[in-house]
Figure 1 (cartoon, rainbow, N blue to C red):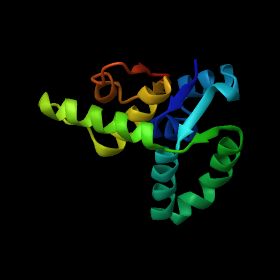
Figure 2 (cartoon, one colour):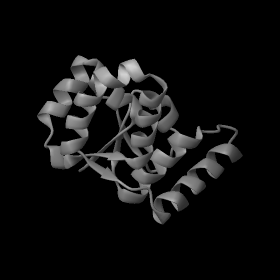
Figure 3 (cartoon, rainbow, N blue to C red):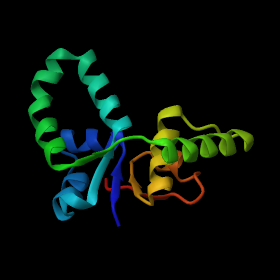
Figure 4 (cartoon, helix red, strand yellow):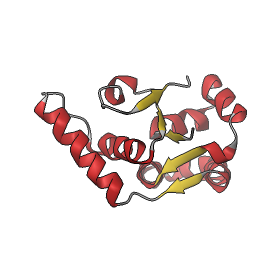
Length: 132
């Protein structure tokens, strides 16, 4: 089974969070993917903080060099729309970016790895793990 790392998990990796580091090291790189949505969120954070970007970019560049990035596509979009609509109807809205990442996870049969378990656990059919 492949793992889709959420933005908070990539951030935990960069910060050296022990549980995340251990699981990433123990997992084959071909079993770990990130969404183009996560790449955007990371790049956005770096664009806001040029000092942090200079310090963090070498580590992130090396990480992304060995981690496949999956492009958000039409099946992902359809799954994300269904997820967001279902949760809104239940009075439990989900953030737009989280819906997109969850949509990719559902559409592709991936396990979403996140510390934001409460947000993602509400998504029907989505497998979620917390590596912290």
